Amino acid sequence: MSEILPFIKKHHLVALAKEGKREDGRGLDEYRPLTIEANVVDKAEGSALVSLGGTTVMAGIKVDSGEPYSDTPNDGVMITGAELIPMASPEFESGPPGEEAVELARVVDRGIRESKVLDTAALCVTPGELVRLIFVDLHILDYDGNLIDACGIAAMTALASGKMPVLEEDGTPTEEYIDMPIQNIAVPCTFVKLDDVILLDPSLDEEKAQDSRLTISTEKDKNICAMQKSGSGGFTMEEITWSTKLSVAKGAELRKKIEEAIK
Image (cartoon, rainbow, N blue to C red; front, top):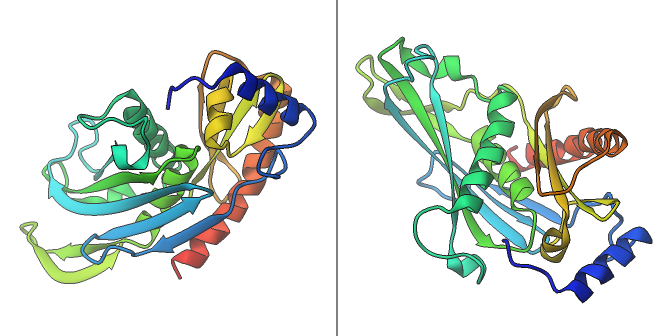
């Protein structure tokens, strides 16, 4: 993900962007084709397969039980992890999660957590003793740019369509299932800045050519629930305002697609 793009290629992408164009023919404010499939893994408590352009990711949900964190004794726990396997890209290496995987998981996790999508209080079985643990696993199958949005959409779809077992008083799971306690749908929208031009949903080459990146997560009431900036470049207030307004509009479109996928 950190591979440097040749200067001539970057210059070409920047020149196109300054003309309001992109290599794949999209507008600067357009997403690539998006497909969402829910419940693709029978043995998972929730799952989703998402393709965004040439990027394909899968999210899986595992529900367990355990002790709560000491500072939140009445709340369940959500833990998000990401795996970047070499099969998805020659840039990925096998082994423990690297910086890119950790950052990806954290940004996706923050967008969901800060929007209060998951009713963590409803995951409490016995205050201070036993709560449900929700594991969100993100698997990258094909990498062609913008993993954050693809994984954020997949994680949200898997949670929104997920089920969890009813528990006995001692915490033993039964064969009866109930819906995951989802109260909202939050989605990320990621932008990159090439010179002085802002692009939504960067392709792989656009990602490599970026000076900086900005991800804005919104929920259904048009509230901003999380914002993450990376890269050495900066964004002006006007650029942030424009990106925020577009995130709200595009977020509504993405939520509609998720809702259609989980019906």
